[in-house]
Amino acid sequence: MLCFLHKQLRLLLCLVVFILPHNATASSCDTIRFNGLTDWYPVFYRDGGAAKGIAYQRLYHYAKYNNLGLELQEPRPLKRMLIELQRG
Image (tube, rainbow, N blue to C red; front, side, top):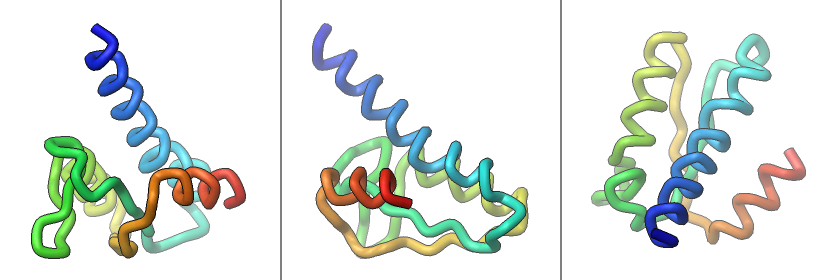
């Protein structure tokens, strides 16, 4: 049960990181810069340097629908990504 909750919290965090900050600033940018854990299969993972997974597909369709570009950043530790998100 704890493992299931942990996965659900990670998915929620991913959605918050990818979608909510973008909605708040959609009128002021034309590219979404994103990052994610390298081996978080099937939610987000990298295959040969390209992003794959459920979260990436959702982000890709959102960006395409809103005529926005996507920029995959270099992999970073989760703690560093959270600090950068907090600082803006």
